[in-house]
Length: 406
Image (tube, rainbow, N blue to C red):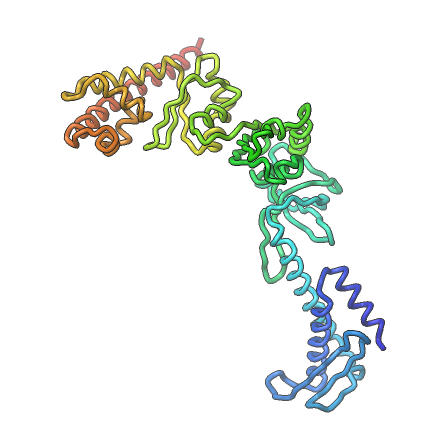
């Protein structure tokens, strides 16, 4: 009995996470290659060489055209051939094992230890000495890591090549936030609370919209936790990234208002034809609604799926007045037509020009010829508005230049 061989196979299988049967088959194939080398037999020669290893005892038997041969007397060169073949096959089996293990874990959060830096990429050591890569683009801006540091990341992708398996990690992907909530909030993991939508600018701010299948559960409160304990853990993991949690609504108007929080919204006009929402906020809420560098409104737009324009009451009234003046100049249009346009979410001549005649004909029962005249008038008014805006911008630039010279 060759129990030493059995123990070696078991140790390799455990260490490399490879099926024992695959290792036995690799050994047999390596011995066949060594035997062919010894006898100078090509695979195409028709000579049959068979090697079998008993899976229980470890006993090895070899036959050349049904005649038993002593595998131990093959010599140094065939043995070296067997060793090289064995190494190649075990490496191939190990790659297959790693790929099979991690490809089904795509989207999961894993723990690892920072091993080293390669260029801008971070090499992270996972379990069983498997190494993964976190490209610079998948690292959170402003975060710094050092070797031997423990790190959590999401498996973004697993790619197979002839030489290695490439496991890509990410800490910037929006789904990383979703997985963190599943870990920190049991109701999310159990499906009681659902993250309906998520928008993120990694390292700066994230907005998520949550809903619940249980009316007794407050989805926002559950995600925040008692005294903010749950959300604090997630924010700490992300290095202080702000997270806004809002309640989901099937009503687009309610959802948009929620998404723009902490700003308070006065009015929302939705144009389904353009996929655009015009939101009116008071002057004191304008900067809050837009956010630093436009971040709040940008994330709200991505969260809701609507293109969002923020206007003050003065700006809104100015646009409505321009539409009203434009429409009144078209023969055959009564005063109530402006209200009908506003009900469709069309609040400016630019909107009217963009939607074209189809909504006017189908939604408002306007004759095609009249609809064309209305759009033509809107196009003319839009040109004047563009010219006025250009002149205003030029005046502002000139004023700024003069202020610099003072």
